[in-house]
Structure formats: structure tokens, C-alpha cells
Image 1: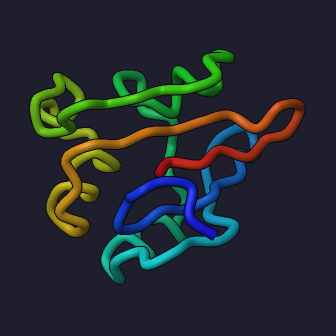
Image 2: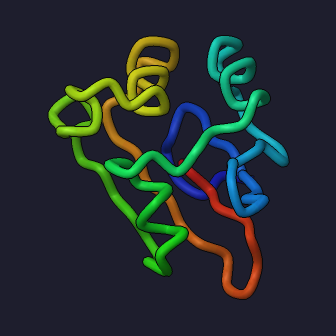
Length: 101
């Protein structure tokens, strides 16, 4: 099933501290390894907005964000390992599942 034209994507679960992948599609190996270790909701990243209750987060150009420039591991990995420029995340109603697409 395709939700959009993204080259890769993943569904994550949040345990109250870290995000872990539940399933993914075409996720580059470097991102699989990084995500499997758990990703925190960095203060300057999109995950923290989802945890705070925002339904959808869209980042038009990851490399142009302050989070990327300040070394946010998740954003750096998306660009370096995945070649991503744009990211979209959404919150699943009533559940702790997020889908950075």
C-alpha cells in the first residue's frame, strides 16, 4: 500500500521516551540500524511536536532546519543515509504510533 510518493517510510511506536520502528518500507540500511536503537524526541525535531499533540508535521527541507544545522541525529541520518529532503509525520488517533513518511 502506498500512502504517498515517498521513497521510503516507517511506522514508529513511542514508549514514553524513545521511538521504535514497528514496520517500514524501503528504509535504507543505515536508517534501519539507527532507528532500531530507538530515537528520542529531540527538542528541536518533529517528533516532539507529535508527542505534544500535533496531528501532522511537515518539514519542507530538512537540511534547511535549525534542527539539522544543530546536529539533530534523526534529521542528519535522514539526509545522509536516506537522501531525504522532505519529511512528514502524522499521529495515529488514540495510539502511540507515528508515521514519518
